[in-house]
Picture 1 (cartoon, rainbow, N blue to C red):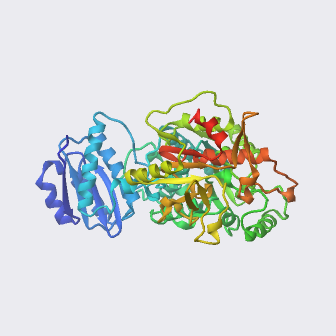
Picture 2 (spheres, rainbow, N blue to C red; picture 1 turned 120 degrees about the horizontal axis):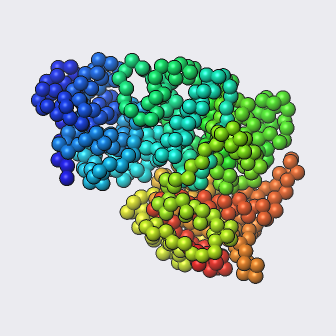
Picture 3 (tube, one colour; picture 1 turned 60 degrees about the vertical axis):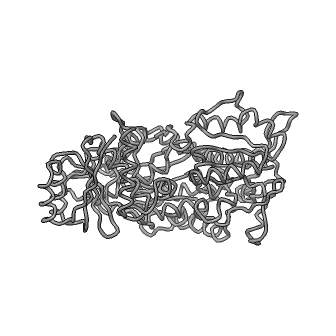
Length: 569
């Protein structure tokens, strides 16, 4: 058990000099410290805190009122690196302060006795919270989008290897003045969005690095904070393209609270395509949700699509997609995708994504993410859910420690959701688009009736998961794709049914109410059969069934399908 103390020091030369003489450990012991100024915080670790404070004072670039130092007789370098990373992540998620650290030094390395130390970290956090350093509890912070979408993440080994290789390739291309295009591919929950946000923050930090200041750490990415790299990024223009409105707004909020980033860096494909100044690098998250020429959800966007084609390419070629737009307005591109998450016919065709992936593989610019970071059931769970929906699963598979439940009583599921939300937060009910959206025009109307329960669809399209009243509503695919839940309670509606004669899952068009989800594309001469739409609907349910970190609850409306899925879930 540790016995930590938190010492507070007014941050000026006289106070720091006096503090340095009080205890030998102030000059020669591993500690973790925070420097807090107006609306900003910096977290550091050092073997010589007094000396490090002197360097900060001499740099004089961070207005600091107070230093807080965590001193413990059992601390070593590994413990301090771990605590430093822990506090950086929580400060970023809390939102009280802007975090001034770079993000390349956030680590997740194991060491002797780590479990015991991490219990002590919780006590250190609570003491700092009592002293006003944080506004929220750890549980509240970990449930925020600020935390989940923060660039201050400890990368997995495969993510770190990919990021290092991507940076080496990008800087080589910049030196040789050649364009580049690469693909990062991964299942739901493998951290594609995390990598995108992490990369943009890292590139911004390199771009604006002050090489005269002492180095912050010795991570594998510190090699890019030396002469030459910032110069290659001079006037370098970066953008993050996010097709879904809700996720885009959440990321904009994170960028607005992160030094070096700005909400204007996050944009829709339409905004990116209308840029007056080409981008040096565009990173596209959820590439599978880019659009082809089709009937889109907005009449204004339908009119804008041909105008952008004509502006960029001189004519309105119906085969052009938003992939072509991104390539046209940027010199370098990074695409993050999972083709199995396309959920509408208007999404970029699978063939275009396959071609993009094949091209990246041919030049060794393709990266696969496989480590499951969301669902605590592991990567096998995502594959299993997809096989169950595709009819390829042959036997029941269990996932010890994961709260996977199949409900016959809808009321019981809603009661369990409320209990999970009270315990851990972020338990929500979500569903396929198998009911009309009456409440969109009449807020007093109910949309979904199952048994004696009446519910409404999500009352907002932006940040629904965290909105007031969301626990009593049902979220659609368009408000949940790209997000994490602690518990996801999924209603499989009558749009998916089971034919006991053929023993196949089939699509029931009469119970599918996303008009854009099954609309033909007459401009391109494409008609979507029930079998075509079935794949999109199965993709939707696969996305919904892979949102839950701690558990997934399932209620199936079609009795034959319920009995079929019972053997697997």
